[in-house]
Image (cartoon, rainbow, N blue to C red; front, side):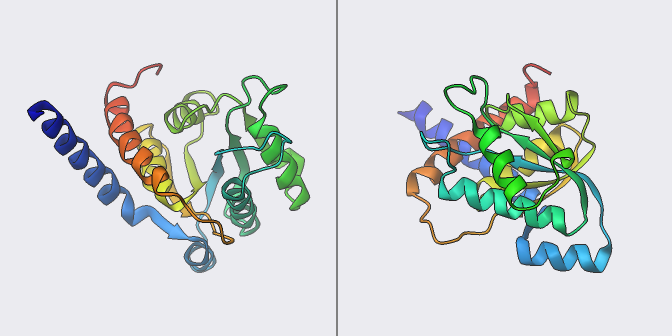
Length: 199
C-alpha cells in the first residue's frame, strides 16, 4: 500500500511537470490563427495524431475533429505539409492513416502535402519516428485538448521545435476514462522520453 501511494505521488509529479512545461506552447485553433497571422510563424509540418476509426473505416467524432483542425492549421500557411500518424500496421484490418488521409483530401489538402506514417502506434512512437525517420525539425502538433501537453512534451524531448493546437470539439463528450488513461500515459512517456527505448 505504501509503495502504491509512492507510485501515485511520483506519477502525479510527472504529470504536473509535463503539463506545466508544455502549457506555454499550447493554443486553441482560434488563438493559433491569430498567432500565425500576427507573427508570420512557420513550421515544417503539422503532426496529426490518430485516435480511432470505426469498423466501416470512418473516423470517430474525436478523430474527425482532429483532422478538421489539421486542415485548418495547414490553410493558415504556417506549415509545409501534414504528417499523418496512426495505426495502419495492418491496413486491411484497421487503417487510421488511410481514413485520415481521405478526409484531409476531402477538406482540400493536396495529396502531395500529406505524408503518412502507419506505424505511429502511440504518441511516443509518433514523435520518435517523426524525429528519426521523417527528420521533422519543427511542427504544429494537432490533437485533442487532454492529449496536447503530452504530445508536445514528447516532441520536445526528441528535439522537435513545436507548439500544440487543441482540436476543435464539434459536440462530442470526452469520457472520464480518457483522463484516467492520460494520467497513466503521461507518467509512462515521462520515463520513456528519459530512457528513449527504440531511439
